[in-house]
Length: 81
Image (cartoon, rainbow, N blue to C red; front, side, top):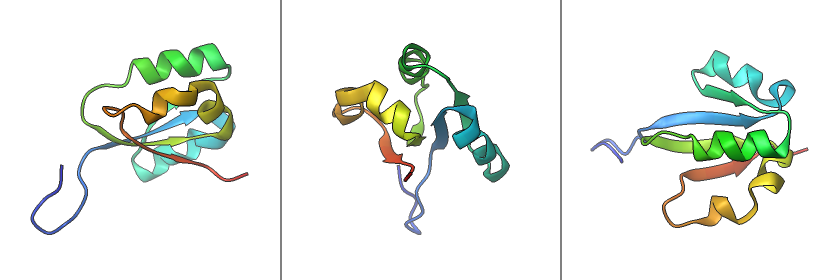
């Protein structure tokens, strides 16, 4: 998933409450706004192939639990509070 120049390739998704992840659309990320844990899990399960990084709100990270640690899962980062 890297090019010869060493730049990462792939889709970036921001997942969590709209108030935390909405602005990521301005930087070109796809936004998966979800306001409750069930919707966050549904959004995670709906991620398409090619997603290289998922930016998570703290609530989304807690809702997803161990799902983000699966071997085939995309790289994740949790927004600080």
